[in-house]
Amino acid sequence: MDTQTAMTTMGSVDPKTRFVGALVLLGSPGAGKGTQSKVISALYGIPQISTGDLLRENVAKGTELGRLVKSVMESGVFVPDVLVQDMLAKRVRDGRDTDRGFILDGFPRTLPQAQWLDRFLEGWTAEVYPGHNVPPVVINVAVGYNQLLRRLTGRRSCPTCGRIYNVYFQPPRIADLCDLDGSNLVSRRDDCEDVISGRLREYETKTMPLIEYYKSRGALYEIDGDQELDKVTAAALKIVENADRS
Ligand code: AMP
Image: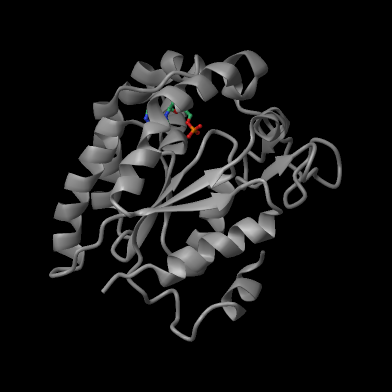
């Protein structure tokens, strides 16, 4: 869905002036969290913060954090909580783009991370939106197993502009080349089949419990991620639009 179409389905308040707070996109690898985050990000003018992308950036730059996490990430196992939490806190606090809110894509992934996030958001909200109580809005994008496998094994991205393709569902016009800038598309090292099953196992044992955690607090919204992309996007935007931030 393009931004213009999305805006016409929404109310009259300019989404780029609203306080949105923290949005959490839950869902297994391949559920489409990144794709949905990008649409919400463009519409509301708030950043998508993907802990996976931030970690990959650190690996690519060869930072101390990058050196610590490289082999863990390549094996599909989770990086220790405290490393991801510190990295995220720095990104939110140092970024000049987070004052009206941000979208978390791939965080939290464990119960201790979710508990840490609650504490972190209390402090952050007190600074940027004093006097308000804004717990995260959590959207769970649920997708069936076979669909996930095709999404992950078919996923390709452009190293230059970041656009995401899928060789089964959204192929580029010319095989292996980005429609926008002609770069050679790449697949992620952890999107190969033997690593994928480990990543899905990590998700089931460590991240699935978060669904109950947020459900019990009345903060969870569920979307059927097997639907067409535009329907998933429309459902996600409706949730964000109606979230009470008063
Ligand atoms: P993603 O791009 O979100 O699929 O993340 C890629 C990899 O980065 C994961 O398989 C983990 O090794 C690591 N990672 C990303 N986010 C987290 C997180 N919140 N907690 C622990 N590890 C993470």
